[in-house]
Amino acid sequence: MENEILDARIFYYSLFSKFFVFSYESDRFEGVKEALNLLLNYAIDEKSAISLKNLAENFDEKLLITEYDDIFHSPPSPVRTTVSYYNEGYESSLSCLEIKKILAKTKFRKDSVKFIENEDNFGFLFVLMSEFIKFGKLEDKNYLEYAKEIFTKFLNPFIDEFTSAIYLHKSSNYYKDVVNLLMSFVELERVFYGTSKPILHKEIKVKNNLSRSEKIRREVNKLKRSRGSRDGF
Picture 1 (cartoon, helix red, strand yellow):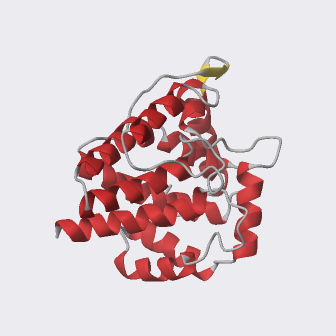
Picture 2 (picture 1 turned 135 degrees about the vertical axis):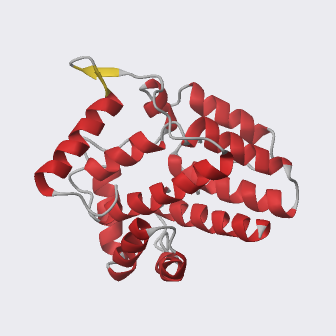
Picture 3 (picture 1 turned 60 degrees about the horizontal axis):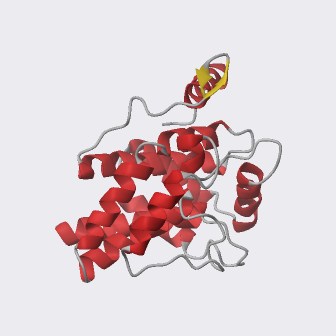
């Protein structure tokens, strides 16, 4: 049973890395549709079952690439993709350095050709989680502790704000279901690691003395009230 749980976690993290790692490769989403169809039979909850069905039925690589670029790269308000930004308000901050220090203790190094983003990019962290869990299962259990550190220190505190920003973005359509699926999985990871959704973390004031995360939360709720939210998030 333990190995089955580890295999499922590896599979999910690998899938999410496909959705969030930027790549110029034409096959960047290879295997995604097959993975979604497989997961349809093992949905985490009702919300993720609905999102998996939507994702599988509406999968289109060209449209997915366009939506990705519109959300994460297009001005004037691309969604930031690093822990540093959500933790300290700017890129390449202490969070990035701390993740590099964790990497330095392992056999893994970032391939700067394959991964052009910083080490604290959420997509790259999903890759690390998948690889650390896999290596921890097969070779060295210390890597399971590295995975725990990545999740508890860097993913858990900031993943809600990151996914809220995606859900709220005006170009987000397909990625709303990606977010729903991701957050269902994150809730399981919180149970696995015995942690919980953070109530507060270091807040960066942005407007009218509101934190960025509080501003996003209020905008998400306003959007839901005005047009109704997709099942889940």
